[in-house]
Length: 78
Image (cartoon, rainbow, N blue to C red; front, side, top):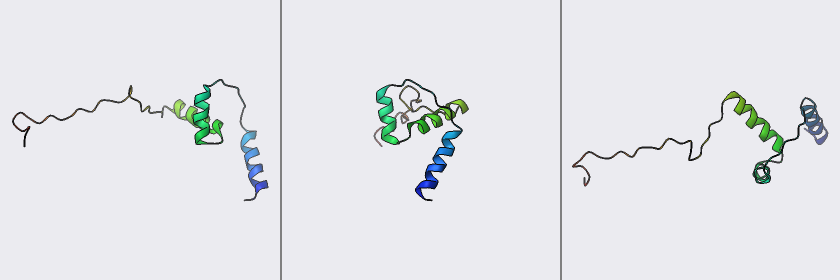
């Protein structure tokens, strides 16, 4: 696929999109830009996942603490 074909394909993808303006934290935008040159794609995928209920947060407030198994009495020094 040459450069002209790639440009035409990118333009076709943009043709069916609607542009909106949003206000985001500059640190968040910097983190997204660290991952990709197309932050709008990352934001779009995240919104789609959120709408489908596919988001799974993985931070300290959402994790279920794992219980450490304590050996029965008398087996501590085995």
